[in-house]
Image 1 (cartoon, rainbow, N blue to C red):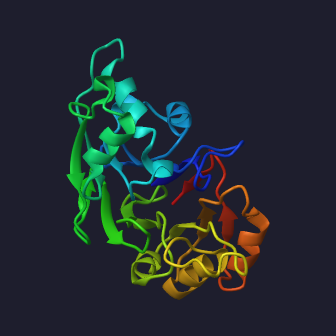
Image 2: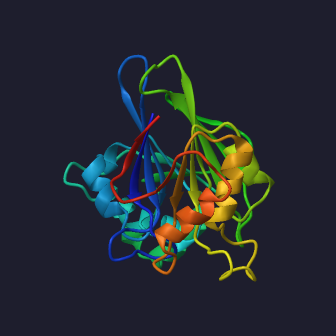
Image 3: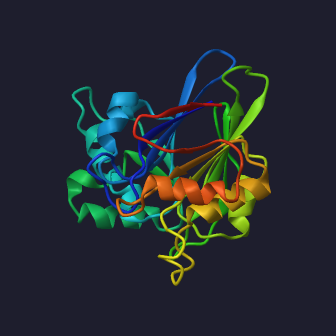
Length: 262
């Protein structure tokens, strides 16, 4: 299983990165590569095209419906609908209740961006796994101002197809029981760390700090911690230093194009 970072900027695209978007890929026993797209925020459709064929996705998994995680779904629909070879078959899009209405709202009622036909919208059910080829995605409710899920992805190791590995993606969340569940036993915890200790202490129920992300990784025994969703005003070295106070395993800050092999 591989994780590819399409975009990792928090809240809005930065000068260097699109907003949130990630690819998860794995081969099955027959050698077929399966591709799941996790989130597609502002600007992430561009790098998606550099890393895979957007018309050949096997599923899309949306953590929540803020624009920095879903805005480019509208233009993905345009790409798939109007390609010269004709419209693509619909792809399953898993997300919170209200996903279809939210995408239609972003599209502004333009018939050219109607999601019908390109996306089969399906609602997450907390704790109910979704199987996509060799990958199993389990949505875990987390704490954010709107309904939001983290996603545990289990699939075959790139080094040994017989061994199952776990990627845990927090989406956007504060510390909560769901975060602890996501981090437990994860080979790689992809955790947001938008806030900074001492700067954002008065705001709870929205985002993690590097320290809180590190604490979740340590408590859950995660094998690696990758910090993501840092807005431009959150310095990567500060987020990393905070995480190091709680977690003594490998820590990285996500960058566009980075690939992590599990």
